[in-house]
Length: 307
Image 1: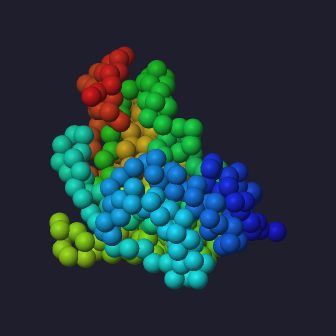
Image 2: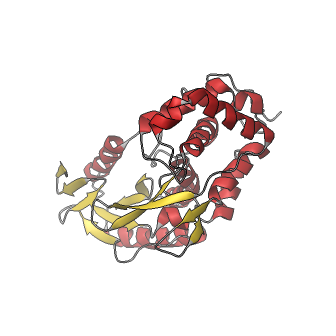
Image 3: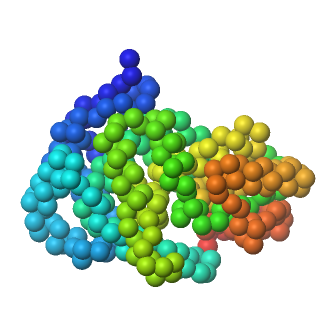
């Protein structure tokens, strides 16, 4: 029998151990309990960040916390919840240039955190060991150690891949298809679709666009991992040794020709999910030449943390 889930009121403190099979049904009363919303709020508050389009700051939201959470719970249970429009800001990239960041209203961040912590375990058990970004118990240091292990195994040719506008380019219909493989609950699916369709004022691309899995959304790193998991499967299935941290990706190979094939295979895998390699920022490189990945410069048998 496929599982349904009646969540305890302390959902959100840690990722729950998911039962076998997809998530069929969630009890809305438990999912959107005040205790669960409070715990989600604590995580949102700890993450910080400025106000969304409604201008409500963390301090202001917390001043009337119980009333705000009660109103949010009522909207969710009645099916009246709609995300507010999203502000888009430009943040500097470490390597130069600007990266668009979506700034959501605090109320929407709370609901996203709640849903994230409910559904993440259903995907976590399927993610591969080559994926390190935004996963429990994994981080940049682990990804760096994986690269060093490949280097020590004499995989010193690297396909250094930049995915063009990854977060902004995730196809929402494909993404929902991938999500539905593990999440069947209609309430959660409606919420995710609503966030993908939320309106964004974007001075760069015209007046109004859709948010998609925009950077800055609490749930976007998980959704990006769900999406790029399809690429992980294709490349590891062909025997390639990759290290991926969100949309940052390197493939370590023993020979230059193998690295060339890996780059070609990555382009094919990305096209299958309607993404593209950025040819101006992707390259084949040897450890003797040196390359940068996740704020670390790898050169021969050394590595140096930048900044």
